[in-house]
Each structure stands twice: as C-alpha cells, then as structure tokens.
Length: 361
Image 1 (cartoon, rainbow, N blue to C red):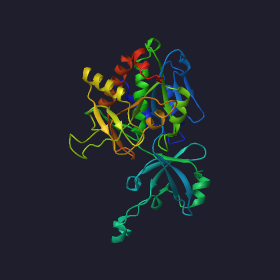
Image 2: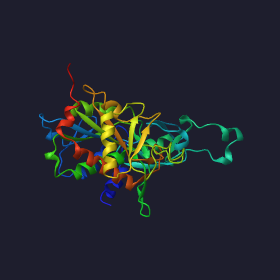
Image 3: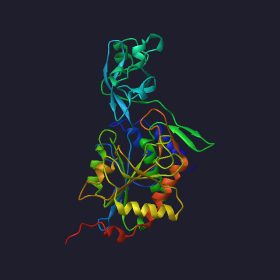
Image 4: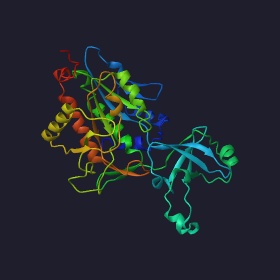
C-alpha cells in the first residue's frame, strides 16, 4: 500500500477552514523534490516555480480544509457554543467526540452535548435538533475553568477527534476529512508518479492545494488567479450515495471506481474533458462512475469562472458518510483515481491545448 501512510497522515491532520497549517506540514513531508510555496490564504502549490511561459498550464486542484466548527462563545457553565464551518446536519453533531484548540495551539478532548434520554419528555424526544441546541463539553464546570485552566478562547477551531483506521480485509479506510484529504492524496500521488517525466510534458503541471473550500470555495479563487491554468482537474472526496437507490441510479458507490462529475450547483463540466476521461477509462479498463448532481459544489465552481474561463472536470473518490465525524473510503477507488488521472495527463498533447485558445472570427 504505497500511499497508505500518506492518507493516514493527511486525514489525521487538523485542518478546519482557515486553520490548514497541519495539512500543509503533511504536504511538505510528502512533496518529493518539488518546491512548495504557500500564499497568505494558506493555499499551497507544487511546481509553481517551474512554470514556462511558452507552455500552457494544467492545474490539479484539491482542498485542504475539512468541515469543522469555531468557538462562538463560552457560557457560565463552561459549555462551548459552536459556529459551523461548512455544511453539518445537527443530528450528525450530537454526542460525538471533538478536539478544541486552545490559545497556545494544543487540543483538548470534548463531547458534544446531548440530553440523556432519562430526562427528556416525549415531546422533547420528537423535537428536531438545531445547531443552537448543541454545545461542546470539555469536562469543565465553569466558564472560568475553560478560559483560565484550558486557555480556550472565542475564535478557536474545533474538529472531529477521529483517527485513521485501515481494514486490510477489504482495503477500506475509516477516517475523518476524506472530504477532501483523499483528493489531496490523489494530487500528491499523481505528482509523485509523474516526477521523473514532468519536465518532458508539453505543458506546465501545477498542483494547487486550496484553503477554505468548505466555506465558499474561497482558496480556489486565489489559486486560479495565480496559476492562470488553461485546463484544470479537480480532485474531490465525493459523497457516496450507496444504499440510496439501485445500481442504475446511484452515482458514487464505494469500490466502483472514481466518479466523473458532469454537473453540480457550481459548474457544468467541460464536454471535451469528459469525453477524454471516458475514452481513457474504457481503454485502460478503469472503472468509472458518472454523476449529475442535484446539489453540492467543488472548487470547480471558482476555477472554471477564472481568467477567460477554464475548461474543468471533477474526479471524485467516493466517500461514504461525508460531512460527518466518521467516513469510509476505498483504497482501490483511490488507486483507480490516481491511475485514471495519470493516463489522462500523459495523453495530452500540445495540440489538445490549442483547442482551448480564445477564438477570433
């Protein structure tokens, strides 16, 4: 399992939106011989220093942040009010284990409050949960203890406390933050696989690791302006819809290969890129799934609208139970995503990029 340690380190890293520093440290450890650059928004770039202005540029995108929370306030009993960073359902938050950062950078264990069933009325048991009902308890008994002893302040990040587990029997991985650390892992693996031939490609290849995707696709607005790609491939930990329908309607089943996304709330994929990916998947016998999403978005939404418009496609590795504390992902799906991305990048010629130049009539 060549990249298992990489995936473990990435998913265990703490990276709430705006606090992606630990993820960048992991990228630094696995960057191979590429130069790593980090901008003021905590976006990171590999191979940006090698851009040749005479060549077109292809950008590999993935985002480093995970759904998380921020300390909103601390009440008189020492319970921490939370502000979601990214999309959460209240029922996915309650009674779960979290880590709360203090002002010195250390993390403390906490549990999301849940009223014991013994004290709930029949009406309370039927009432839907809201974010306002939920707080984080770090085991303190007063506001003063939280502030003075634990040194926790308003504005500090809170993340799920889940640690990576690998199931060798079926090559399934359990972790937090597969959205989108599995995409980060795909991007790093692809750059590693192409390290010996990257200078011979007829285009510049830059891997951009964007911050703050979960709070509005923000980092990619900056990366696309800096890299100025002619083409872009977005790697995502796409939500798996296993068990929601049947084999003909489900669009991201685990262990069935990467997902090629045609549409979501943020973009419509470039048709030429879709055709090339489908052709190569068939030619190399790589399983491929197809998705027309009713909701959701990725950095493709920011990237494809940058410059004069960037042809973009999204390859997702199915992630079961995304945007919760615990999720599953298949190492086989990860491998097939890397394989498909690699053969796609190796297939591109200089002439392919000519088709995407701005046309004058």
